[in-house]
Length: 180
Image (cartoon, rainbow, N blue to C red; front, side, top):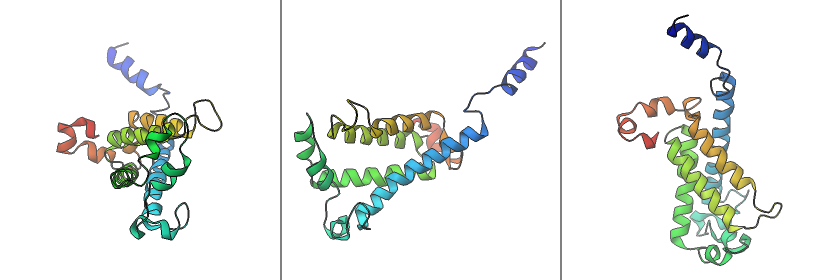
């Protein structure tokens, strides 16, 4: 058997879940779901649609997107650090910019690596703000989602149901692959 035949046979028999069309769609749907979660949090905090944020607490109505969580929900050894950030303009701007940009990037499938890294960082910071978690000595959904985000970027989930292939072919991303 020639090397070409062996290569072709190996790739045809590859059962890697990443190579599976069904797996690619599941990963893409996970990316879209997490992206929607981030973008929805941004929109609700911006406009106060009454889900997590009442209308009077909307950012456009003068409310602070960070005051509720950082002012009331933080606990544990880092509570003082996080509570001191509650309501600070710089924290509100960074938090909202992060939610909006991460959500939009994940939904569109552009800048998936940067969005995954920033999203994972934001989730780990939110986890650190409530140490120890209420139902487990150290693990909670923030850590799980952070790991999933990193995994989604590693398998290039944005190439399915997203603009990842197009984005990856742009001159900017070819020059700076970290932007993929």
